[in-house]
Image (cartoon, rainbow, N blue to C red; front, side, top):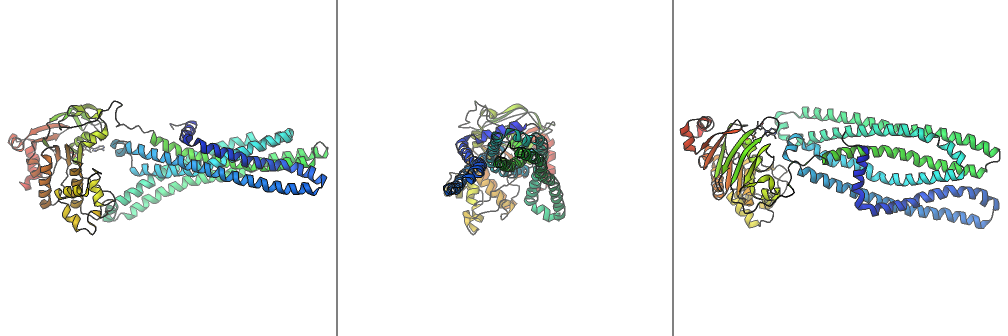
Length: 579
Ligand SMILES: Nc1ncnc2c1ncn2[C@@H]1O[C@H](COP(=O)(O)OP(=O)(O)O)[C@@H](O)[C@H]1O
Ligand SMILES: [Mg+2]
């Protein structure tokens, strides 16, 4: 475990700093709650020893008034305390959740390649939820019970220090089991939350892959996976429940030793006339009132350990370094002409290099087609230019500027990417297209949709551009989705265009038309195109044939055919039937 419990507390405290005033107010109000409790315990003695002795109506009336007044003070204090501490807790959790989501979005593609996104979702929802339930709400208890406890203990010592010592001999003994139980609870809460993460990941995968599940009829397998994990979650939670349930009984048994001692010793002293009956009763009342908060505080420790377990996991996510970030002296990439250079780039997702000592210089406005067998690294190359990953060695420049030295925002502004993965948001078609350029007018959106050959089918939809599509665009065909993505990229109007199998889902007829639109678009832009159709590749200014992390061949279609090498073989294999 990287984080120490102390560190976790301190970090949580940092989050509460903006709400110091609220918390102070709540603490002040807790004094009111605790103070009235202590006052009630303290007043038992004069009531018995004094009021009963004097037997005047005036004092009896006063006693009744005091009861109501104390209850009123306590009630108001409790309200103020609870309201301000709970709202402070909620705001802390809100800030933390915003931070964690923000950080999670800043993590690189490399992180998401290794971590199921369901896991991240679970940390943001379930782990912080656990933190919220326990820390935020239980802070009240700690304040109130803690102050009451201190008050009661002081009162006990003030009343009779000898009896107080007898009452408290058990306290140090109680700390041991309490802290042991707390540690166990923390451990199993962490484990159960990790099950929750896996559960969320399974959920997310089965629903986003629902079509595959249905197609292969693997509902049973998915249910089994889910149930197994769910069972494991229960096993862990059961342990938490077991330790939690044992806490109160253990404490009660320990407390009975203290109570028995006080009774045994106190009664003797009353018999010897060293103590009045009222004093003993007041002492026992205070002691009884003290065991309540003490038991609850120990229970609260369990809850806090739960929160710490959850917080550790939340901070683990927050502590994942953002490995792709702007350097401090990053500049804006502006007025890009579109010269792109890869300079001796080495890159691998793990130990194996996908690109090694890879160099190429692309002139502004040039269209480069990337060709190579599947897995040759074409998408990787495009991803490096979009800075999804950083090279292990070497650099990539745009107009001579290292892309690692410019702000990511300005870099992304220069790039429009159409990927095979045609992700659309659960939103209107208008907003989906406009995602690349939120300021674009409806007329502009319509224009790019026409260019992408999407306007016709959009206009046929019941609500036209206002039609809302499912989270994965389930109501659109693959080709339609792809055309929306192309429109989105056209609207970006960026000097560098990355087309990774951008037209793979289109039928031949619409591809020809979209291809024409893209050809127009490519004219003034530097374009990297990965295509599965020969027609796209033939028109490229240059074709790069990738093999084993390097450029095996480079040239125009004609030149490469004449060279009669790898390209010719790939062409014959891939495009044979198209020729
Ligand atoms: N996120 C990733 N993590 C690990 N390996 C990856 C990742 N993405 C791609 N690869 C591997 O990198 C190689 C190149 O992949 P890719 O660039 O997608 O090839 P292409 O687009 O040419 O088909 C493949 O061997 C693939 O398995
Ligand atoms: Mg690819």
